[in-house]
Image (tube, rainbow, N blue to C red; front, side, top):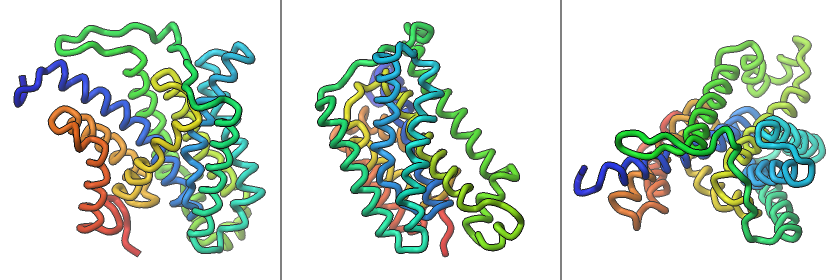
Length: 293
């Protein structure tokens, strides 16, 4: 017992918090990439997360393609949709105020959610856990479902790999330089518009990847993105808008904080992240990992 709470209940809630933190981290990472490198506040991110889950469901039910292939194909398909979106609409907004991008992507999110809601309704569609990850491990202090452990590991690997690419490779250096001085980078023979398009597509693909991971955990439904995107925006603000490392660390940490809050003060579990956001902004307006202008 810890403060009157059984160990099994405590660790169970910490695991749930870590699961939520895994989704917060991947989604806020995608948002941070798009904002940090393209200066676009991508409110469509929640809808693209939902699309990833739906594409996985469609692949299984219409084409008989299972979970493992869906982990690859769904992010590619939704990422391609993001590339088309960027070329047709978002590329026109790079030199305008952030508000225009926010309004455009918010409107697109409503349209996408409305189309899926009209086609599939609002009741959740089941997506089975792959056979290889069914069951779980009985640890001394709790029962660990294999699939939930996989979600945490997969999100950690993807987040760290993305951070390494952006911060430690030549491609990442080109991306960062292209946002600071696109004219100079273009003079060195780099196709900056293509680089920006692929960056947006990759950020969208991260959201879709999170959607595929979420499909067996939560029911696949048109509102799943709308339910999580506000929290993810709070995570991004706390970590620092555009901070890659900040989005990863803050995502996992706040998931754990949320899990602990459900144990010791359940009434505050739905608002604790927003309370932390207010406190952080009062002390450090640029966020924990953000840089002041």
